[in-house]
Length: 277
Length: 277
Image (cartoon, one colour):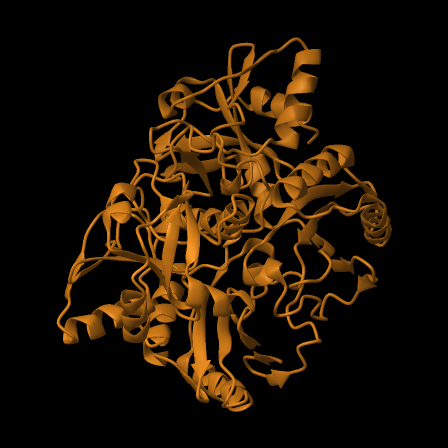
């Protein structure tokens, strides 16, 4: 099951090509996207995604024309079975040279691996991202905080993880600071405290799932804090999680081949539930 | 005038979309490309481009299936007017999930600005790329030396240059070393010596235009050398050039708003001619 919608057209057959060869999203990766969870016939935390794509688009200098986008999102969502969890993506590109922005909305079924990862956790490896921790200060052209479709390095890093027998990556700055995962945020807990990495000069993306998790955790009495970390801090934590929109909060059971201390299944379940899973 | 060819199909109407919404080249920028100059009815230095896309594809783990690619390139080239200089691009992506690689060949007319830039030179600004000079050592997932289609940062940097009243960018590492331009290599001359930056751990792309330029320059008695540089070295050079396949070698007349010493038109013409322009 797969759905494709095109801004200005509506639903189309996913077997039909919809992007021109000279679309700058295709030729230059010049665009941004959002990944959303479709559940019970609705887009989960849609306002957070709308807010974030507005920010990505503004940094890129591309217009996110909200009313027709919302109409397209609604149309595609309505065509998806209400009883099936879906992985939705919105793609906004600069379009063809001299033309209007391109908008595409897709829904796919969840990757087959996500069920096991939610249940059993994942193994992560740390990989350098090549940037210094403060590299993105005053350098908007580096597109820090933009959910860009130029994701080739993120995908190559996940392939490297697979080669090393792991399911995902925790990126580090060249100076050894924890950054984020290719498609999720890093969250860790120590006793009744929950932590994540600050956004800003390090270029990482604000995570809508981490934000919801922290809001709900705070309501439940957790202390939440935004702080820098090194890999040693993750090894020392009670729980380490990668928080993403579609996969949810999955726990990390090993880092760089070093198993984490015994898995606290209650903690995992608590954090997943707070994240909405 | 614009041509589009699709691997496995052949020439198609450029007004027809050819890329599926779930093509990983579109959704993730997961692919590579080559830019070539079409002149006198042929692809200039085609073997250097074939060799480079093989290297890019190998690093990405995508197959560049050479015989059908050459047939497609020949078909599109033959359809282009022999008396018109063209900008050709080859796009190779990972394709749709679980499917075969996507291959697309396009030819467009030269960007209107190139004529003036070849004649009058360009103003450049230096911008950080956020990476350290050695960041790409033992980190193949950073895709150093791969001509990836995840070019959003390169495009954003060129927009930043335009905002600063310049035509192009010279990227620097965070430690102040000269790297490359978003779509060309940096070359400079001092007396009868010609220099460029080494490829390797700094992640920059091997430039086919710089390589040809250096081969021909050496034949004409120039001393050529590969060496690190800082911006001061460029300010002190006799000539500074950005060498790219389609635009050729254009000379830099100002860096960060600081005009370079008087322009040696004979030197510019000599270097352009050695580069094949």
